[in-house]
Image (cartoon, rainbow, N blue to C red; front, side, top):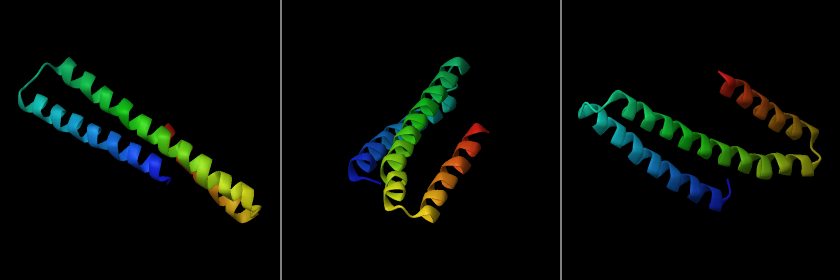
Length: 91
């Protein structure tokens, strides 16, 4: 993972961690269900953004490197990893 991406993801994950703690407080305070669910949806969206950034970095860095290397086994491995990941995310 490139340093710039790592830094951005860690920053986002830290904010998400704060959001999740806030949701916990909302539940403890018996806040309105719709408000809690709205915040959960916001956390899911934020996690998707982190996931997208990591996937983009993996494709731009790791997969691109495998393609440029000309190593067929490494290319198959990286593409296989992506296919498994995409299958898992469909669930």
